Image (cartoon, rainbow, N blue to C red):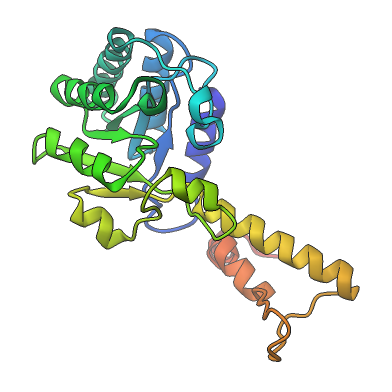
Length: 258
């Protein structure tokens, strides 16, 4: 939990103004009720806007990577986790003065079936979770069935894994994905989580640059003939802007002089 909180703090205190809204993956809460409490209040203090708490056994696994290898705790134990998280959310607000939203998440679809997913989400809704989230549902029809089982005012979230033509087996397993933002809204969901999209893009870009570097003994920043992939690299000035150098330089110039 400590590393998670420190990472959230470094992001929320970045030079960007206003700071980014952070939804932090709190996994299982990193232990029992006391650990969940520490995780929630620590992240709220660090400036996180929301935190997810899920029902996997510890140590947790990525549902998309592990598939049927994901193991979840009984519903009663998952309810205890959410109750502890809700209590910690209220302490964060009333004692520490920090607001944070609780995302109650279930990963039980492949292990326990859609009916159990729906029952858990309805339970989390009744307990008082701010947002309800079911991971790795298998079709648009399943997402629609879950949404229709919950109250209209309940905030819901849908996660996206970006699939490409070489992922045909995965495309067949998760029917209809990936969904557009409009698709997500049409199904009645309020939030769409593209948690891996940036990582997939970064890995693809790094692999492409590495292939070009070793093939051409250098980097071709742009090439317009149709036989080559056009590869664009950010200028160093753009890198500095994204990292926050201009704001840092401006701040230092106010207080430090040779």
